[in-house]
Length: 158
Image (cartoon, rainbow, N blue to C red; front, top):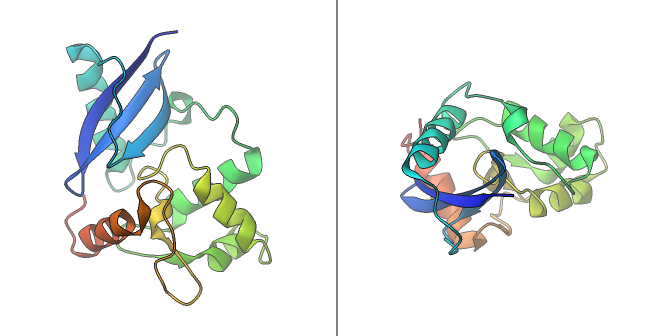
């Protein structure tokens, strides 16, 4: 079981991709942990993969993602988020719940966001409170969430 990390950048923040057995197992934003570094070839391949996945209509290669331990209902919510909330847009927890056919499940959506192993790729930073307030962001806190939203609204993302 070879685990390695690749650091890329998004919104001028470090983004660490953790890869195990050639599958992405986690993305950490603004927090780079020390784990064995990837070889140059592996780092280059995953950097290209990340860029491709982040592009408009980017790669949706689910075979590259390790969802182990994430309930299917949360995965469905995250895929809907990725598909329907584009760069520069936001949605409330309740609106996203309605999009997956569960209009009274805003708390379930919140839990899916909190357990999202692939923030940025599955952009939980685009989910706001019903009031429009920023809310929390388990991948780096409200300051990082605000920075990501500002970056995307300014048109600096792909």
